[in-house]
Image (cartoon, rainbow, N blue to C red; front, side):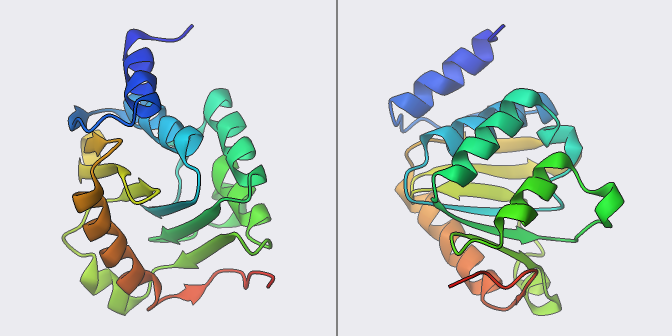
Length: 174
């Protein structure tokens, strides 16, 4: 059953609403990230700890992720760390499997990039307008918007500077 929160988030995503809202908790994080992946059309940038299972272990999320990865939308993922294979979430395994394709690029953060991102929470940005930007990781608290080009641009610039300083986890096919 879809919650009222999920319906509201999906409405905002479908309308490309320029409305900033707060988001708290792993379940609400999952709902917003799912909506961002569903509504993306061109490119998604994501800075995450490890795509941990607290947020990603959900059949709806995993199904959305599969569909997203199949669309061949550019997906750039920057991870704080890469767990051992037996400790990886299902979502991370799916992304790593897809990273042999040119449209999915996964990198592990470097020391230089860590310095650039030291005061920055994890975030996801899609199509230069939609984002979820974490402000308190312990509570998965974040600011979200489906049509804020200004903050999205700033996050993308920071992501790109950081991403360029990092090594590929797997070299994508070209």
